[in-house]
Length: 169
Image 1 (spheres, helix red, strand yellow):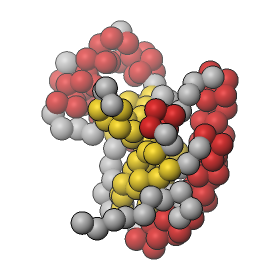
Image 2: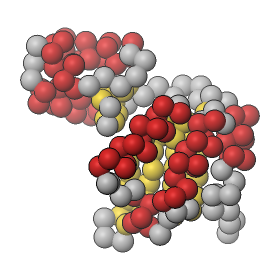
Image 3: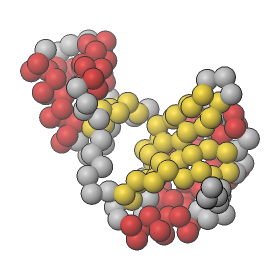
């Protein structure tokens, strides 16, 4: 088991993108359920393995800037918001909404390219899935990641129309 955990970490650390659980299972000669178990073990050992719709990634935000921003817009503005962030050099790591019954609900996005934006919009349309912002009247939080502070500033300027302005108390 220990050897498989090391191999998974090695594969994820060398990968340029998400790695599907099925691929890991085939490579290691184990079941898909074994991969789920291994990933759970790695998470409990504080490895930042993230499950995305496209597979697993080993998160490494070293040297990158992360900021959570509160925004509000309609479903019709999703494409423009994502394009604005990506074109300014940012990555939309996730979306978070506050639900009155379940509390905080987080959806992993990892959108950093125009191709990612297109895939997300196409998936939303083809599955008829409703975006999380519909649960909260359009109000939601994104974690944005950029390579540096200047890029973060550009991203925030690009989405300024959607930002919920900060109120200091």
